[in-house]
Image (tube, rainbow, N blue to C red; front, side, top):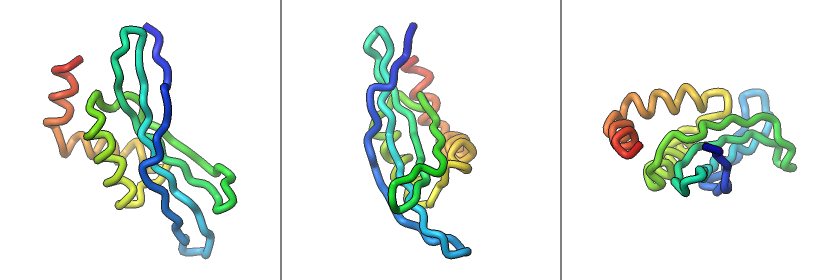
Length: 110
């Protein structure tokens, strides 16, 4: 069963000033995936770039949920909490550990 990324949708973007005076832009995306059966599921992507748009680093957690609304809520919460590409995987694990009902709903629909 082949899987493809359908698209990335920007949820939030913010400028942050580091302790050493560097300015970065953090961008938070929801990724839309689909498989050959037409099933859709969602993931997260966080990018850190310069204000000029040069990508410094990025990370993604594909296929974390089959629930679109939940994935958007997670992305907004991560933007408010200033989750970075380096911390995305750990924070995603913590989020779903703290919200087991989401994991149960996803596994029941799988």
